[in-house]
Image (cartoon, rainbow, N blue to C red; front, side, top):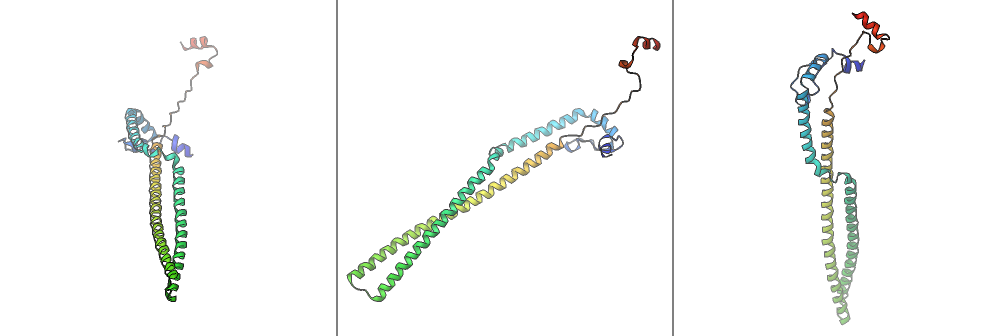
Length: 219
């Protein structure tokens, strides 16, 4: 029944399948009436299809550069994620070294405080005090280097994360564009009008066993 209503019934009200791409035949007609429109406007319908195909071709060409690396999207994401993980691991290593150096510096500071409290005034004590201060200065410089490197790594990690987000957004835009274009191509498949069934009740020639005799009777 559904097939009869959607494809076969001649009295169902229907619209031109090419209306969505520019056909100006907007009247809702019976299927048997619309068939005449299909016949009369066939050339115009072809022109509409060619124009739409040309437009879609232009859109696809504009999207072509974006599709060059589309097949390797997951590979790119995996590589970027690998870089991000490597940076994160290095930041953790730097933080560990920084903590170790801070512990050493604190130990040196406590030793200096003990030396000052004991009032060490001997040459050996002065030498030890100076050595400790030199170590403290050297450790301070190392800490500054580690802090600078840590800041650079954090900046690099942030930029990498932003690049990943931009890339993913771009891929989503491309996916949406592909979906729209695919849907538009699907709309280009007009439903074929049902062919009129012709019933012939006469005698077919190939069924006449005695063709000469039957032909004689016709005169």
